Image (tube, rainbow, N blue to C red; front, side):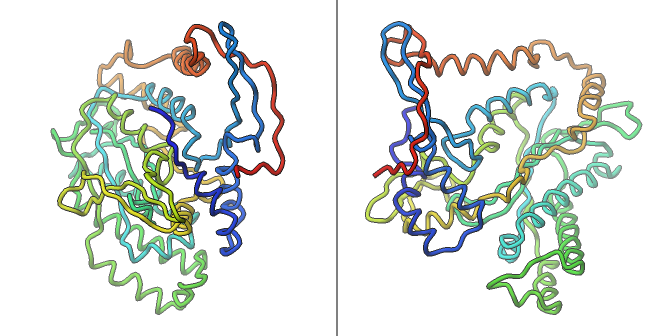
Length: 392
């Protein structure tokens, strides 16, 4: 696929300076915008490569490596996915999505570190508690959880995607207990417990004065107002969606590849940038035809504002592993699972050397000369960063 002609960086370079002058931003969002604007440009320096066969030269500028940048993270995603292959089991996997009511969006946006932490903790507790219930599954499950904060229209929409084993280990570790075919756990039960756990966690956080109430939500600092926010949410259904099982273990990786190392939107979705307006592609999942691609045009400043809504707090981990996949005992748990499933890893799971070989092959492909396709591009000269570089 050819590189997109329009990028988030294009819009940031054209309108970023004006946006920063008009809107006070936290330091990490300043750094994010600067990184994306500078990514793969003379501002970060780079090197000159020369083909070993035909002598063709190519300039390669350095990447910003910011996790929010649409142009970065491809190699990191490949490495992560290859490593995850070693954790696949020959079972069904389910995709479960937990979404908060929109009434909590403003509170979440202004308390991101704490709110996202509580969101991870309560969704994990919900899955593990219901799965361990002898009336449901009666087993210890394993799952990945991935935080997303955006919808297709780039507005703030916090939710957690979970990829969950279709079964688990019995309490006495003597057998693997499978889910019913095509059915994971009852969604209404998951929804009710998730609702109770998160509302209780928010109430505790309020009582311990852990929440902040700046700007438009200042009134919520009053205990009566905060209680009035939470009380109606106890009586509505919260959206928990459990999709049908994946077609096989390797399809789990194909799914994860779309959801792990990306933020907000890809550059390929940007269709036009004219007269201070950005047009991008999206899907309306609430419509009668959710798979139909639609177009949305908004002002560049609004596009930047929406993109920055999804900048994660510094150091926040947006992919987490739980249950059988928790890092501390993951190796032992997976060995037990394979023993109970009588599963062999031969031919399915890569060794460390194989993972390294895949990554090395990708790097080798990136070095192939696109002119003659016979030689390799060899680094011949280092380019220093150009201070004050401007695309104009």
